[in-house]
Length: 373
Image 1: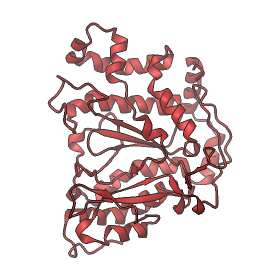
Image 2: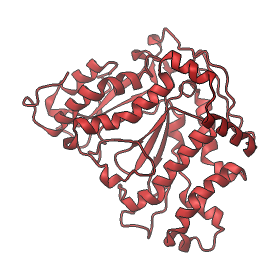
Image 3: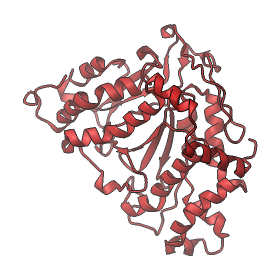
Image 4: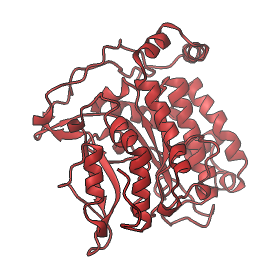
């Protein structure tokens, strides 16, 4: 589907050409439908297009995208207003739903008494003529001045941006804590991180069980994770040990929390501040990975290593795209899809043989004496 670059020689055209050649099928087909778990008509994608005769951008709900061809047609239909990005939600008209995916997987015990079991259809039911298909679990953390206090810490306070100091102090520890909780506490295997393009990150969790969680399950999960540090448990102690060295290594944080107990100050300043609405509200539009941020023009790149990511080195514009960068950004997405929706034989083999890492995680959870919700 690659177009001849001479037809429309602009940076955004170049970006979309590379996107459709290397990432279109993976992002718009495999990821959007969880490799066939959902039908294409059960996922609604809409482009966010910058109009030449208006300030800013607008959604184009009349252009519903369900296939790679649909996306290609929408992108190049009007050369003067190429899309900034494409977003989708789990809401579709009820009359399109004729088949409900069922995962024949056993119920799994989750920490804190959270439910994790397969279901045949949305327990919240059909409301207002739409069926809420739930899909991926998105965790959003944004470095805004409401959630994080950056006063007297850096020069970007009050601005809708993020410097490397802020990222190393707030966002990098937040990703490391979240990865620890997902991997070692909840034992999720299929997830990846995406740079938001401005000052935060999104975590996509696509485990088979998680994509079928109801709104109630998602809300209970994110609310528990958001206040996990309030419980006096070994899990909270482990998180505190991860954050304490960062707090000790930054004198301004210690100075402004001199009259507060250190443990309380560490969690208050550095524990991730999650946007619970994004996770629990399945009607919320999610920006697809590798899209262009509408405000900054940065590509929303994936984050292969949460501890080594530096925004200033990864702020790619539309004209910076190449075959190598696109393939590098696709690796975390493909790996997560392979883990969750790989070949059946491999999945059965993984279920039969418990790895040493899984055994260690199970033993660690038993030793933690995880409380009920």
